[in-house]
Length: 217
Image 1 (cartoon, rainbow, N blue to C red):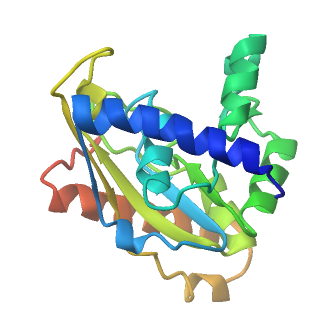
Image 2: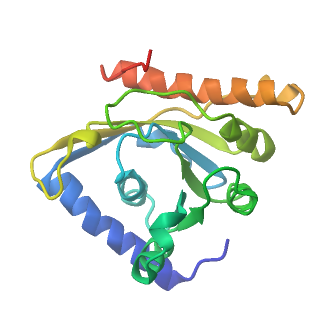
């Protein structure tokens, strides 16, 4: 997707303002950045514990890869206000309707040909830190687009208060997952579920390594 230099500069500047708050006033650490490809279609698949992840994940990326975009689907209610619509849209967010949104799905598929996109496979936020089950639709997206899929674990952000200082949180980028065996299977629901299950296992492994794994069972 073609994005103006002005917009890229604005996004990078905004990310650094957010990063100053996150990493200087607070203690937001980034681990495993070397696992995140610089170019090509990349799906950043993260657990969902806070409403603020869509601004902290881009900071984790843009401090190393300035002037890139990190796109994110967001609930359409956030775009009803004209200022919010402009602000979130300028940062790379785009609205998604509840249920099956065909148009948003096409946008995601198109972006994943060349861009970085963040998705939360659980589909809903777990502020308790519990890791839920993955949505089969994310498996379908991966099957159709074949991006580099980077499992990502967020830890501690659900306990932050805003504004605040000295609060700790961590984001961990894991190694891209290998789906070559699953891509040999038929394009059907069972295959999509196995794909997203592997994604969730990847996120779980990162959380376990950090001593932060909580299962919904």
